[in-house]
Image 1: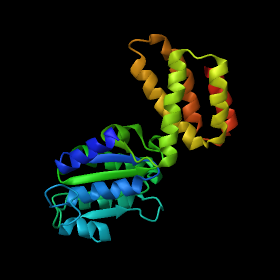
Image 2: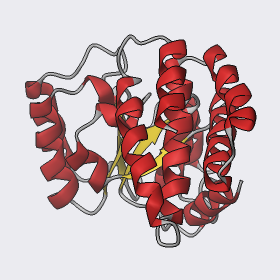
Image 3: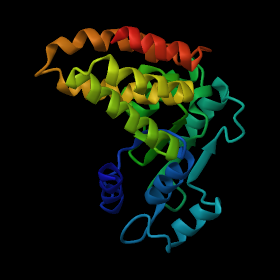
Image 4: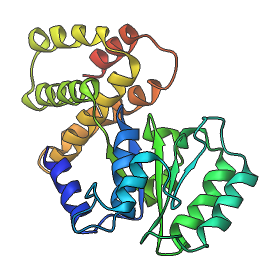
Length: 245
């Protein structure tokens, strides 16, 4: 909730970054809110009342460009056309917004073309990369964007589970406490396990200055999180986590 409030305050103060990577179950809803905030001409973006907000809500704002809405994967030629269009000033809004609705389908060439645009493009151009998983985009793109997770119910549960796993590790819990929790993870899918490992990783990294011995566990958990991208059963992943601890 704190992150959500911080983001809304940044919208109201017009202090948004110019490029975001939006992941999570409700990523399209969050992306629409950000786009409306960028084109809003009211006092507290997105006000929902000005012409910009109303057009954004109807999907007809000329300065909100939805790239690859059908999920077919933008070819290099289309990405170059997008880059050229970015240098044409907005029609009526303070910003010109490009929503890459299926950022995970961009090939390496397309991402590299956009990388230079993010770094050196005009100040009025804003970018939203949507993806179910941040790891599906190049690390160079991820490093130039601010990542926002649009949590739905499942994502929130996965984050909570990740916090619990980190808590068990940090407290030095034994098998009697750890195994029942790990067995419960077998009911989750690979994406949920990836999300909870991401949360666990963050908690452990923050504790590293006081607990350097955690580096070994972090190193053992890292390949498990990477393996969540492949067709591996939740049971196998859970067993792998148990052996890493």
